Image (cartoon, rainbow, N blue to C red; front, side):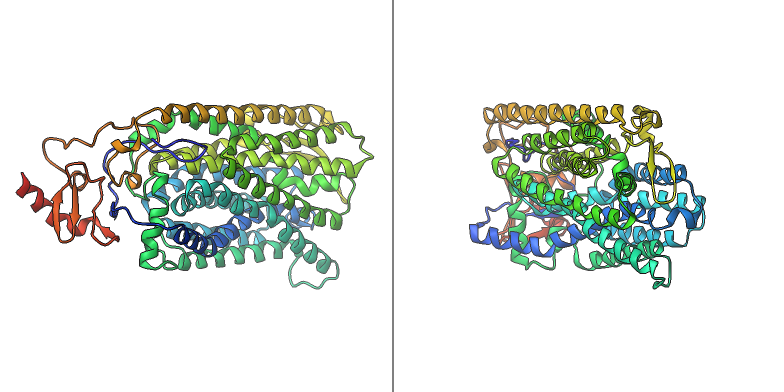
Length: 572
């Protein structure tokens, strides 16, 4: 089995049921070809993934811009109802997470992703015509539902195209647009707010926020449909030869190729894998401080004593996290200590919480700086997501672990459950009763105003627990690497095993596979056969589940089925 190195895993398993086979001849991949293909993938795929994730952030935060631009007044909702709009989004997210994640496996992945992006954009635009709380609740629910597939989809695309040692930095790049989107969102909201003050807009400024972002999102969904293939072997931005080399690049990942078969045994393995629950614990704990930030950060900044215009501009500052994220994950990939590297941002987040806690209310700049530093806790979330992408093998298992991870994130307490804030027009209580409140206390309460000491203490505790969890994951990886380094080497694995739909937990075989007795399925025949030129022959050492051709190329297993059946019948 391959070492963890906070990178990839593989296991022995049954033959892949995929319709796409990868030749098992050792294809020469020069360093120059490797670099050239990686750059080509970077330029053609990564910008689109980054754009989509940036739009996802803007989708979540546009209500925070709108709420200080007259959104509540025009829709006749209270602050309590506004908080419910944040909660219902995550309920929709929770409901959609598992079914849409498995739909990504059963249906063409790029087309399914494109469909979800387009619908999410349409729903976002429709918020501009909502006239009351009921309309908004329905739209926000479906917004969360369709958006729930995006993070799993981007993780799967990253795993499909990149080596494990590249996945951390690439995940950081597209995830960082989550934060850098704050620059675009704040700038747009500020411009629309100023134009609205001059009565220079055909619609209210907050309505245009939803119309513009929704239209852009739907357009990007169409672009995604046109440009992004379902699998690497269909990538139009690569030549046929480059597609083979692109697959050769990820051979060492040992995570298989995208397959549509659902495997219950992989679900069971995911549920019994202790790493699954360590990952989920990180998502849960990291999300406790996060619940109020996304929907309420504009209100909170305004509550420090800033005007509406200042608040919208100050929202840009959170984009600094994007640069910290990329730098830290690049360093983590370089040193192979992705989990351990999170100690740095989590400690800084801890310091930021103490600043907000200890500084007097009159020092609004200092408390604002502390508020910005608190947000660094999110890096633990991103790093763990990249670890799942790199370390969890087997399509069904990866989908299951991703779903559990993201569900744990949405089931966390929303942190800002009861908080009194000041605006230019009103003072009220924000109630964020997301499903996560079932498993956590209300941390921000009116009775604790204005210092909210219990809530800040909760964030401090979460940061400390995160430090412990990420250190534990790092130490367990090291122990597992040592065990695997001393275990059976890759020599006992059948050729081509790297592209099978295997998970990361089975024992390493010490010898080649033994042909089973009885009726042989199509997959079984492929497992024990190779094709050399036009003459199929039996492979005594095991064929790895794929067809071998003299000239390296990708082939459809079904096309050689008849020849293989005759070959094996003659051999027997």
